[in-house]
Each structure stands twice: as C-alpha cells, then as structure tokens.
Length: 238
Length: 274
Image (cartoon, rainbow over all chains, first blue to last red; front, side, top):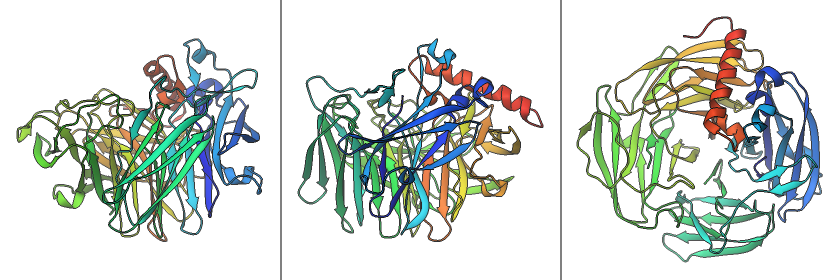
C-alpha cells in the first residue's frame, strides 16, 4: 500500500522522494542485502496514469529520487505518485498486515532556496495486488458530506496553495471554502476523479487572515498546504 | 485532547496557534468557550497559568517571547530547550499540579485536534500541524532520519518529550548509521524538553540513513534544517516504526521492529547499550 503523494514542477518547483528500504526497516536481518523491485506510478490531476518507473533497491540506506527527472518534459506540471515495494514479507502477511509506504516528499523552489521542505504521507490511499492491478483504498461517507476544518490560520502576506487528493475509487465532489476574517468567503468546487487532485490558490495581503473548510464525501479530505512568501516557503499537511 | 508545545529552536522563535473548533463536523458537534492553560515544569512540579480565553470558533496565538521561562542550556553537545505546554481546557486548574492532567475537553480522532506549531526568523517561518501526549517512562525510541540536506543547510535532530511527572530525568540517545550499524555518538537527552543535536559534525553522506535509539525515553523526533544563505527553515517529524505497516496489530509490529533493530545494532556496534 502507498499514499498518493503530490508532485509539482510548475514555476520552478522541484519534488523529491526519499526512497528508503522499507522491507529492511521492517525486517533488517532478512531484507538488508536482498535486492528487490520498487515501482512508482504517476498520475495527472485527472487521475490518469501518465508514467511508470521501476528501480532495484538494496541495502539499508537512503536514495533521494528526483521526481521531475523521471517525467517527460512535456508531461503535466502537477499530479500525484505512489510507490510500492515488491517484496513478500511472510511475517507481516501471517498477521494480516501489509507494508505501507507513507514516506517523505521533499519540495524546493530553485529561485528561493535549495532547502527542501518535507511532508510525510499519511493515508493508505492506493494498493497494488499480485496481478499488478492498482486499487484506490480511500473511504467515504455513504450519504452525507463531511466537513474537514484546517486548524491552521492562514496569514498574509503569503500565497497559499492547497492540494487535496481523491484516494477513493469513484469521482468525488470536493468543495474548498476560504473564509477571510474580514471579507467574503470564496468557494471552489470541483468533481475530482479517482486518483486525481484538486489544486487551489489563495493570496493574502499583509494583515489578512483566513480559514479553510473542505466538504466532501471523502472521510479525510485534508490538504497538503504550501505557504509561499517572498523569499521562502513552508509545506505541511493538515 | 492533547498538549501543544511551545519552545525556541536554534535562535528561531517558537509560536503556536490553537484552534477552538474541532477538525471535523461529525466527532465533536458542540461548540463552547475554552480556556488555554500553559504548563511548565521547574523540575519538581507543573506550574499552571491560564493564558487566554477563547470563544467558539476562535484562534489563539501564542509566542515563545511571551514566556520568560523558555530558556535553554547546552549539555554535552545537546541543546536542551525548555518547553511550555499549551492545553485547551474546560475545567479550572490549580496553580500547581503533581502530574499532567487528562483533558476534560471533547476529543477528536479523525484527525486529532491539532494546533499550528512553528518557528519564525526574520526571513522565514516553518510549521506543522501537531499535538503531543505524555508518553510512558518505560517506552523506547527508534527513529530513521532521512532529512539531512547537503546544499546550503545546517541540519539538526530535534527530540521532543513530554511525560506526566514534572521531575527531570535524563537518558542516553545513541546515533548509528543504519546500514553499517556503526555507532557514531551517544548524547544525553532530557524529558519534558526539546533536545537539539547538530548533525553536520558527523559527516553523514547522502546515502547514509542515520538511526536514533533511546531505550528509556520516547517522544517525537524531527528533522530541522536552516538554510545558510537566507535562513529558510525546514521541519518535519518522522513516523514511528509501526507506521511502516498497515492493518494487523500495529503496536505489536512496532515492538517487533524495535526488537529486531536493537538486536541488530547491538551485534554490529562497537559498544553495548545501557
């Protein structure tokens, strides 16, 4: 299983992924020197599969993968990706458990700083079975829409960019409401395909503050938030 | 409900924004005024101060500069920063208590009731959505650290611990390279504090995966980076080992992963464990 991690390469942004030997972290004695295959799948904002990549992994170390270098220059500027470690760990399966890739995506913006801001994965968003079939694992409410409230106050001067991923197997309407402390609320509503992502931007001037609410049948539509200032940025998940 | 830690970090001022509204509309539906209390330990007791009253739906903002107790000291190469713990409460607290109390306010789990916890310099600010709960004194820490950056960055490991008892206690934190098992250092860490260790002195390469182990203390481990050229900040916490698996018994998975790694590092390291 893997989370669906956002990637972006618009406006000078770069995305990296810290590829660790997760099987060896789980079982170091048996997996430390056993080579195996890692598969990456990439999706555009509409959830369409745009690229696959695989690499052999071995040893307990760290490999920083440049996502932009894996994608065609003509490909989409933003989307999501997932990562699967193709390993059989009998001690896990005997307990009804699965290996989960909830690792770390690093973002940098070349013109501002080469320091990366990291955000970790959270969800068991997508699975890969023995036949190579991908299945979205996100759940949702059956009848009602739920409201997720970002417990972060947006503060200017800054531009906020929010990314929300649909990890369910069906298209879902996602409504993002930005409520300024003084001003008119602004709402963006979009039907997001399975494996797709909604990206929305909100610019606040100095002294302005706002809140964000997200409504959807997805049971945890919490965004990855980029807060971009003149000379720096911050990235975190809700 | 949890606590929200406020502290300074390598000359960057800490801040916390607390939200008096639930993270969703299905777990906690009642809105009510709540107070924010600050807890700090002097090594023998928790000193409690009410610092704000929040109406429903309101944010409260708190800065480390407002708390003179937030000092730090260097102990054998570890920077130990005092921490103030902020808590949203509906009960009245006495001015002192012998251990951190449970929350009386409603609890959210999906996700947890979080605050913005961050640090600011003139050039930059960085934050995460988080909370911290007191940990058992018998628990251990195993943390894999993939955050060291090699261009224009000073790198630090930050270990944040909160326990119910206010008395100070110390433990050892061992630093290894996961692949070779080489132990590169042992540092002292303290409870109820943010312990900051500079990682640049160890000469880690971009293929090394540092691993941190403490047999007698646990908490939240972070990677913190500060750009040399323009002061931009980077902050992220690592997952506990149990997060490497899903379904099944996660606590058992965590225990087994820790057991396997402790045995492995014990075999491979030059010295033994305390």
